[in-house]
Length: 79
Image 1 (cartoon, rainbow, N blue to C red):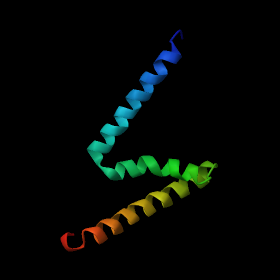
Image 2 (cartoon, one colour):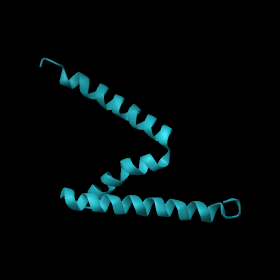
Image 3 (cartoon, rainbow, N blue to C red):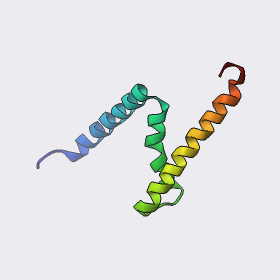
């Protein structure tokens, strides 16, 4: 279409990064886990989408459970 892709790629990456930061700031860390879990599933070796979906859900649940247990342990008297 005549667009300079080499110049627009860094701009698109910057806009996507700012949008992800804004989403995490608005929703909180739970939204960040939602963004991070599929990438973690891919890093763990899940290549097929069906497997990656279930592994991402499991990773997200495990991350949130670990964060909850850590917060309850570290801040035990002030829960």
